[in-house]
Image 1: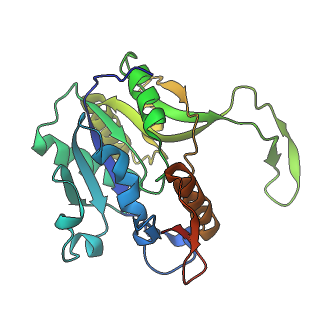
Image 2 (image 1 turned 180 degrees about the vertical axis):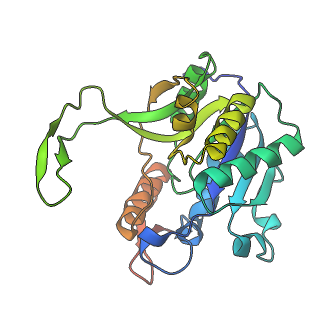
Amino acid sequence: MVATGTRYWLVMPAAGASRRFGQSGSKLQLPLAGRTVLEIALKVFDQDPRCMGMALALLPAALASPGLRARFDARVLPVAGGARRCDSVMAGLAALAGAGAGEQDWVLVHDAARPCLSPADLERLLAAGSGHPVGALLAEPVTDTIKRSDGGSGYEGTVDRSHLWRALTPQMFRYGPLNRALQAAAGAGREPTDEAQAMEWQGERPMLVAALDGNIKITSPRDLELVAAIVALRAGQPLATGAAGTRTCG
């Protein structure tokens, strides 16, 4: 694939409480491939000279951590995240404006809990999204049979999956329209589950770009084991088992 020259900014929301993970502390600070989940999630952007700056929205405790600045590339702008994901993204956008992000600059929003984004999938997103008037998001077609629950243990029927996709990240939009979409949602008391939904509420329809490599989100300890395996395989390294039973790559 021919590399695109598209330059962009990054917002990475990383202020979640990790409640569904089932362990104390942030899952983003757990060890992965000799670093942390958060550092691995940033790595693909650290290595991309087209990334002009990265706003990293963190929990206040993480923001106050000694030596935080030394852990990241000079382009990383640590900021205080909000109670909700959309609040963290808006805080990140504000930080990027202070760093020089302009109205028509591209901004990628990527979940820190998705550390397996491949350079190839990033390239596919940039190449496709930069040619679209609204922007684009990585996504995967739904391949499982989908059932609609009746609200309990039963189900009402089977959902046609032929046009269903799972939304992933990064999601790629122009700075100005994305910022206004999120601000409008906040002003209306609405909480989008991702940036694409905020754009949809403004009548926009971004492009779906098929992700071809593993890009799973860490929600449970079992997900972390799978992520560690993916990272190790891509690096051509053997898996190692951590003290707590978490499989990591050493």
